[in-house]
Length: 542
Image (cartoon, rainbow, N blue to C red):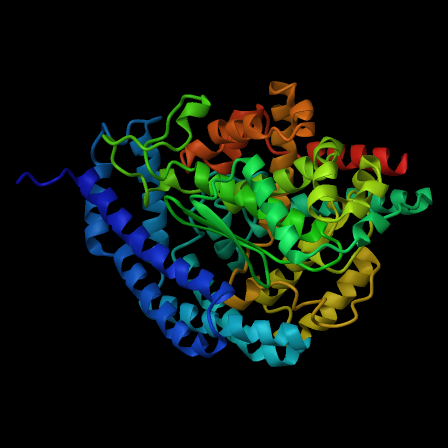
């Protein structure tokens, strides 16, 4: 039997590792959805063991040997080819993974699993002090991970940054963690983006307040049975093009999306009787992530054809791409752009409510018939400072992100202690949004991210908003019929545009490169501010 070429051997090993990683992800999903509470301790050990096995495979010397062989092949590294892009990203992943010791990877998984359970109980009781010891452990382990990544100089950068680094910029530990989620971006660059954006948002929020316009949001107080909301959410998912034969929608404490493998993308949301739009937008948000996962070429090589016929149909003669960088998302900023686009640019638009209004009257509560489409549009587009990030309006959402960025950056620098988080959190909410935090549950315990070490993740939410706005302007220029389609519940041309221009590329391009390729421009905050000012003008008459 002929031995496969190094590239075939390499990609086969990556596929095997990704398959094992999908099993670990499935355990995490189960922990957040159906796992009985008494299983928590054993689940932590399971997660730790799987994390060790995955890390061992990712850092195996054989991977390094095959990668070096492939990198010496001029045909495989020819600029512009899929193999060259794949090898570039495989090298990046391998070099980062080999910086982490196996015991640290296992401990992060074990403590993260325990910490996640501790967060659930602490959030329920609004007791930050009960969670603080676990959070201290997670920050200590995450700091150690950042130190490992930073050995030998700055972490690898891929040129995806939305701003140019200052030549005298001193690297910080936070950069190494941010690099996991948004390759090439540094904390200093995020600060350069956030500082002027915060000033513009503060001004807009003040203008809205000074307008004196009061929006009647009683339409959102109509009670809706959670079971009916779930059924309606699935109607919306089908219209968006999310394949429920290759995915599902479940309930959890904190909504998320998991794209495990080809044919398996899981969404979660949460319900309450009042304000049905929280669940609706949570579902649309996670479905945006899910459409990205389902649109990635995990089953077959990417196809340049923009036709709807292409939709993820694997070729029987093509090797699977699962496990290769070309089948994975570029960055969390790009990932978040997809979810925020569907949630805000589609779901909060007036055309959307023209379509959805009769449906919610039919499926949720006949009392919605007493209100107009305009009432729903206005009620879902208020700019009103609030406590909860995932329920925040578009105008104030990014302020929530900035607060989290500042706190986790300060914790990594050693400028703040874990015990000080509630006080600093509450102070910033008062300073930035003018709201008083009544308890930890609605304050610093509202997000799950820190409990399992997702530090450096939060800034990608605002990057996602920036990318989404810039993509949206291009989409509307190229699909002039889009707004009329949305009003009819026809979303598939938008989905196909995203499949063709964003999803199918995987990690072929870096985030900044993709933005420029799609829109013709470097990432800018102006499209987002045009969008937000336009909304404020329609709603508040500014």
